[in-house]
Length: 307
Image 1 (cartoon, rainbow, N blue to C red):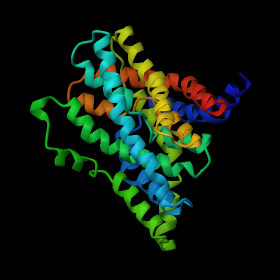
Image 2: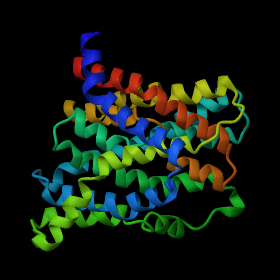
Image 3: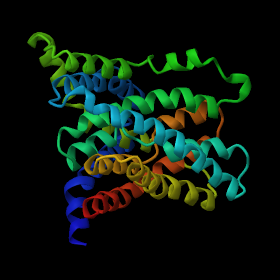
């Protein structure tokens, strides 16, 4: 219990405090959340990724285990969520929704600050790669699963969506700079570093503000409980088993498990609105998974440290 409280105070409560501030401020002064998110995605987060990846001390070769594990994990968890939908007799439309909610975690806005607080700084390299890969997989595989057949575009056009924002190119640029040990001129590198340093707190603040803009409708408690169980309990547990089966190093396994335990990614809500996949239900699930995450994430951080 003492370890749980220590982790809660030093890791998850700071995250909750900043998100809660964003939530409260949104209810009081009605911030332009869309503009804040656009600033994060197009400027702040790319600067953070370029600076951190370019200045990382580890060789680029260390990212490959995380890269191939993330792809395997993504493809493994999709049928877990889909089969759960079938097992509980949910309507057909819930299959792809539960599949994506199980696998798609908030590895960016929530995961990066979490890793900064819970792990050594070198693990941010791996979390940045996970974030980029999840973005690519979400806009390709996720679109293919969620979009009605008449709306599905070609694979090339779906892949192009991953590059509509600078996140993936920023990761590639950062890795190239690191791989060739290129240092940016101070006139360029310092502004990038200063802008990037604002990402963790601003991302959490924006997440809280965005949650405050979501209105929950009437939700089936059984279905909500199922999606929360899949995301907060089953996904990290399966990830842990996969990491052991694939022989991942212990500390890296801990990171992968904790990343999988983060709440449902907010980007999924945008896809559900676009393709009419139970958007009110999914918004409520995102909110509840975020509200419960201080308890569940703290528990998973504790478990990975104990075992």
